[in-house]
Image (cartoon, helix red, strand yellow):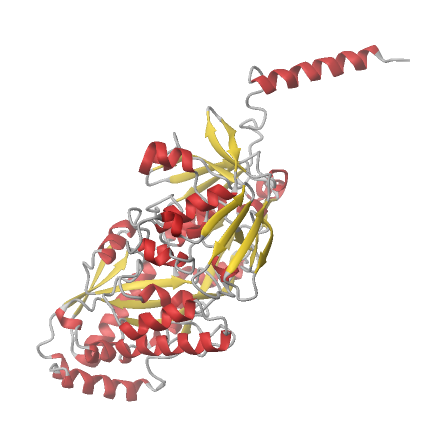
Length: 558
C-alpha cells in the first residue's frame, strides 16, 4: 500500500529542489547560518601586496593563495612533497622533454556574490595555456616568471626575443589534456608545479577587468575556498567553496587571515586570548620558551636561509673585498644562540645542507671567528679602508619586527667593533621595505628565502642577471650559463655539480651574506588538528579540523 504522507513529502521536496535549480528558492542553501558558522582565525603576519598568484611575493601571499587557487600539483600538507591537484595522470617521453597531463573534470571556477558561492564554469586545459602564457608575458613583469623558463621558449618570450605566445611550449590537446614541451630534459619538473607561479588564473575576468580582476567584485577562484573580502590593514576573508571536490571534508565555513605582524607580541597576546587559532608567523624570541612549554609551538626544520643582501650598485660595495670582509666578520653562532633561540643553524652558504647529492658551497670554511676577523680586517685594508677609515656610513634595512631589529643591531655592532665601520639599522613597513629592495633604494638589507620546492636550484636561479628576485645588482656570465644548463640537465649528478659551481661563484662574489637556516615556528591551539609545521611552510587549510567543544571549553566567552 502506498503511503500518501510519504508521497506528499516527496512531492514537496522535489518542488523545493526544482525551485532551487531555477534560482527562485534556496539560493543560499550552501551558506550556513551565522550561529552555526565555523570560523577559523589565522594570523598571517604583515599585510600582503598582491592576491594575484602570478604577482604574489612573500610567504604571506602564498599562505592565502594556496587556499584560493589550484594548479596541476599541490604541496602535501604534512610533508611538503608534491602531490596531484588538478592532475589525474601524466605521461612523459624518455628524455623528460615532453609531459602530457590529464586533468580532472570536477573542478570549477567560482565567485562569491550576493552572500553565496556560485559556479562559473569548469576548469580546463585551456586555463593552463592561458595562465602560463600570461605568467611569462613581459607586460605582466612577474618577479617569478623565471620559474617557467623550463618551458620551451618561456624565457625567450618573457625577455621579448620572440613575440608570438603560441610558440611557448604549452598546448591544450583537448579540454582536459595539456602538453608541456620543455627547453630540455627536466626530470624534476613535478617539483616546480605546486608553486603559486604555476597556479591557474581565470581568463574572463582578467580580460574584462585587467588588473582589477582581483577585487571582490570581479575575482574568480578555483580552490577549496572562495574570496569574500579584503579589509585593508585588518584581514582577508575566505569562505568555503561548496562546489570543490573536497568541500564535504572541509570544516571551516569561513577563514579570517589577520594581519597583526611577524614576530609580534600583539599576535601572541591575541593567540592566548583565543582570538587566533593558528599563527603562521614565528613569535618574538622572548616568547619561544613559554610557548614551547605550553605545547602550542609547532616547530620543524625549514628549507630556508636568513641572509643579508648587498646592493652591489652602491659605490661602497662595488669592491668584493669589502663584501667578503663583512661576510667574514659576523658571529653567526652568537646570533642563533642569543637572539633566535629556536634551533636555527649558523650557515656560511645560501643553500641549506639538506639536499641529497648536493654539497653547499660556503663563503668560508673557517669556523673560527677570531681567525675570520683577521682576514676581514686585511681585506678592508686592501680595499683602502684600514680600520674602517674612509668608509662611508651606510644603512641596514629591515622590515619592522622585533627579531629583525635585534639581528640588525647585533650585526651592525659586530661590524663596528670588528672593522670600524658605521652601519645604521633602518626599519620600514613590509610593503615599503619590499619596494625599497626592488628599486635598489638600500645599502644592505635583511632578506630571507624559504624554498618554493625541494631543489637547490630554487635558492640560486633567482640571482641570474636581471632575475625578478635579484635585487642585489649581481650579474655574472658564467653563473647565468651554469643555471641555464642546470635547468635542463637530465643527469642529476652533473646537475648538482653545475649548481655547486654556481653557488661557489655566488659566495666568491658575495652579493649575499648568509647568516642562519630557518626553523619553521607556528602556533596552534590544542583544539586544532590537521595542521603541521613543514619544511616548505606550506599549509592547505582544507585539512584543518577544529574541536568546537574543546574550543568552547578553553574560551567560553568567545
